[in-house]
Image (cartoon, rainbow, N blue to C red):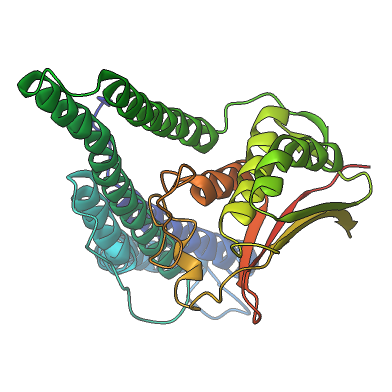
Amino acid sequence: MRRRPGLSIRLKLTLSYAGFLAVAGALLLAVVWGFLLRYVPDNPQGLLGISPNRYLLVRTFFPAAAVAMGFLLVFGLVGGWILAGRMLAPLTRITAAARRAGSGSLSHRIRMEGRQDEFRELADAFDTMLEQLGSHVAEQQRFAANASHELRTPLAISQTLLDVARRDPTRDRDELFERLRAVNTRAIDLTEALLLLSRSDRGNFTRESVDLSLVAEEAAETLLPLAEQRGITLDVTGGATRTSGSAELLLRMMTNLVQNAIVHNLPAGGTVTVHTGAQGDASVVRVENTGHPLPPELVPTLTEPFQRGTERVRTDEHAGVGLGLAIVHSIVRAHDGTLDLVARPAGGLLVTVRLPGMP
């Protein structure tokens, strides 16, 4: 945005300092005149017959007062310019850092030294913003690279299958069609997951009152055949737990949590427990499952896009695309909630979602 040039802050502060000193000097002279000189008699005999009188004092006082006022004005301008420069030096560093950030350099930090004041607080806040922005940009770049790789894989597989079929016309077409269908389904699932993740990150959805207990029951009912197929006991407990948000996104959040708990479980005889309830002003959802023990260093990475973990990669039809918990995290964050993942000592995972509650 183009703006008309104006006076710099340093010059404005300098003029303010000089003006303040000039006004203070004028007030001091007025006080001297009002409370001292006016009591001096203005007659040839002076005060008690002793000279000088008011006329002589005025002629002697005012030239010296004019010189003092001129000195105050010059001193105010020079001193104000120096003081304003020293006071605004931190702002100059912040402006330079902002220009570097605007040109694309997010690695620079101000790291202003000295005691805490308004400029140091602004500099620290700017450093924090740069750090978060740099982390976000790096995350987006990593996400784009991973998404490109994941999308390229099914396309490359499809091309390979088609090339093989073209070189070998006698190959079983039903097998080819089935494999192409599986690869295409995986690509569609990945694309829909990416779109959902982008939508939840933007947070542009209509909020309404949602009962998380009903959402949990719906998700459990949908995934019950999968749980029975794997020999997993699925249990939903708790009472009505209301929050404000998108019913569609919250259902996807709950479905991803329950499906993740079913798929990453024991081969047989495992359990999945979903509990909803209120805790203070928050609506809480806990999803707990059995399974193999998870390394503590693996747990924090599970909410990152495409991070499945070596112990959690599956090769069956429910392998997923590595976006399940990433979508959950994004939906929870869009609803102003928190997501906590804790590895159970006996194996499996305890996932706790806290969302703002409603009466």
